[in-house]
Length: 88
Image (cartoon, rainbow, N blue to C red):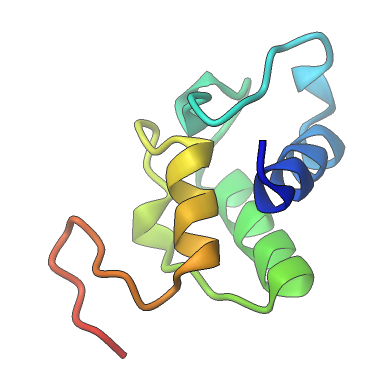
């Protein structure tokens, strides 16, 4: 597990206490997190900005998005998103 993924996992556990006892790894989908909704996505986005100084567009926080995909995006923020996002 990369350092980025470890920090992301810790943030998920802090933001979503109901994940206690869940296996959280690169394959965990946001939709697997209990009560994950649009407000939860905003909270996760804010955590990422504060922790990694990277902004990930909210539309990339879909229920099928994995933590591994988010970690990869944090590590390489200029990578094109599958949705056709243009390079900054």
